[in-house]
Length: 80
Image (cartoon, rainbow, N blue to C red; front, side, top):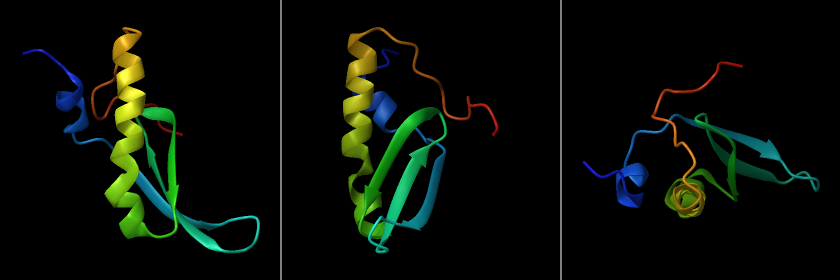
C-alpha cells in the first residue's frame, strides 16, 4: 500500500486539546498532535479548531513527504 497524503491525513493521531488565554486575556482553543511535537493549531473555540486543524496538518505532511522525512505512526511519541 502506498502511503500518500490522504493515507496520513486519515490516521488516528493522538490529539491533545485544551483552552488557554491569549495576551489580552481572551480564551482560545488549541490542538496539538503528540506524534509531531512542533504541531500546534489555535482557534477561537473547540469547534473551529476541530474543523480546521487538518488544513495545517496537511501542509506539514506535504512538506515531510516532499523532503522524504520519516513520518511517525500514530502512538509513536515520547511521553513528557
